[in-house]
Amino acid sequence: MAILFQETDTASSAADLRTWAIKVQGVTKHYQTRGGAVQVLAGINCTVAAGEVVALVGPSGCGKSTLLRIVTGLESPDGGVVKLFGLSPVQARREHRFGIAFQTAALLEWRDAAANVALPLELAGWSPEARKARVAELLARMGLSDAAHRLPRQLSGGMQQRVALARALALAPPILLLDEPFSALDELTREQLQGELLDLLATISPRPAVLLVTHNLTEAVLLSDRVIVLSRRPAQVLAEVSIALPRPRRADLRDDVRLHQLVAELRAVLRGNGG
Image (cartoon, rainbow, N blue to C red; front, top):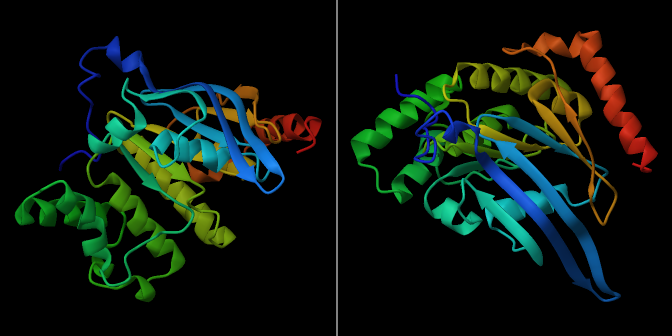
């Protein structure tokens, strides 16, 4: 079976595998309002190594999703630099270096699940035969084979997010960007998908770099190797907390006292900033 992620051409040696998948340097962002300019990001510096899973947390409205949109190239910073394996976000998008999944699945309503997953492959010029094989592989991996020909309105919220994640993986990107992908789901479904993502990351070699925006501290600790804590707006990096929990991880780790201690540490940092 084909791997879900591919190595980039920057990862051709052991040394290259230790390079930064994502590097954010001095990023600032302002928005114009009727009352004048509002600063959202104030000199953000952060990195994600190849193969590392990093969660980004902070108070509501602090600019987490804005930073992620800058990383994707959907927005431009007012200052600072963002590089993905040494490329600008726009270049990285053109070269299919990252996949992204949002809070809402954003599926095309007139396309069934298989056709939604196939969309990036079509845009990249894959042959019909190659698309069919790749889509079948991804749907099977996500437990969606029986739902391949259902339209989005015929899928539950959890199934829609699985389709969105499969679409994000379609071109085997070395970077995966997740903007609160489970936050709109009920608690049980959210926990189930967190477990499925853990299983997915445990079976991929090489593992992609993942940048996860979340407001759920338990999710941040459960999924990540490191958590970056942002301050209230204008956002700065308050702290970086290493998650020294062994991998592979299981979803039942959320009941572990070590996880609870790390969540408490993150909560204390946020409360100290008024979050």
